[in-house]
Length: 424
Image 1: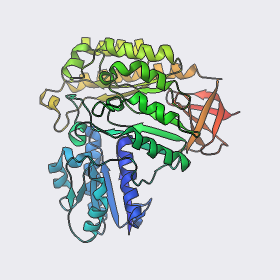
Image 2: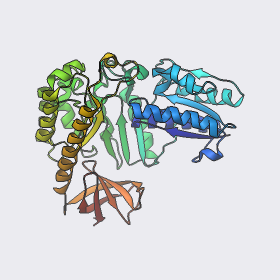
Image 3: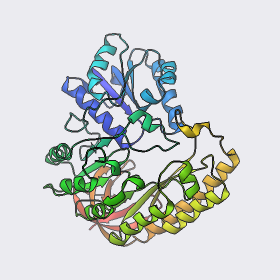
Image 4: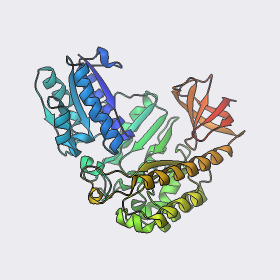
């Protein structure tokens, strides 16, 4: 039997899909790249933003209409966050909750037998050292923990993923060791919040990074998103770990707002000043650091002064990458009880920030023009050529290279989103 898996959302969700595929392959199912040739379609949902919610709901409905002879199974965050809406959209669909991936084969078999099986709810089953079929054979995604310690008012993901559960360092190291032996050149350590790793088990993210980075082989490590409040007294050890040769100089540190008032109302549990201290120390020690952040525009309590605080923060810090989102109510999030700001105000603020964002990033990338940088070739480009990642995790489009190779690349052209170069 043939299964097609369609994935929405973050790196963590992509890893969940790879695990489901791994379990299915072990049970002699075939994973196919075309839904037309499949017997079963698994839709791995994301629910973090309203447009994505609308997209996955419409997708579930259209698949049932267009492929009445195929079994449709829904997995991912929607299963836990909004089961009522999911049941309305797909009353005959089976479910695989994000904590129930080891039940994937059972659910698929039940669906093929004409039954509706819905496996959901929290479990503590490990997601390391389990079967996996990688989307990209050169990139290995390792989920180092699941859940978080946060109480952010706008977030529904914590409803789906639950409280923090960290996997043991020794298991993660074994998982990565196997991936390196299989030829992976990029290791992505991912979580809802990587800086929360070990807060429940007594281990530390910095120790994990160092142990993985000291494994034998040619590979680079990308560290996933960190919540500023959980870095705490691990800051200096984290900086030390990031300076190791095998670690990308890439820090994803969401700030969400440049206003301490709004940060407090969001229950982010950190201040702008604390954030700047973390960024300052990283940049002092790692000058070529790529700093990525997330900004929410138009949180319900955001006034013009709050908004200008965000504008000034962006201009001051000059982020290398900004994920900009308009605030939207989410199912189960506590901020959903608040009144939205006017639509025209939201649009104006978002447009203004977008213009600033692209100008800053374009200017930052221009500084790399005519430089020669080390990079690793990780994937085929969607529009031709290959994509290599520099030591600072900036994508470079380059031709005439081998996948998985470590190269030196001359930067010939820069944009606000990527670089273009030539192998030297």
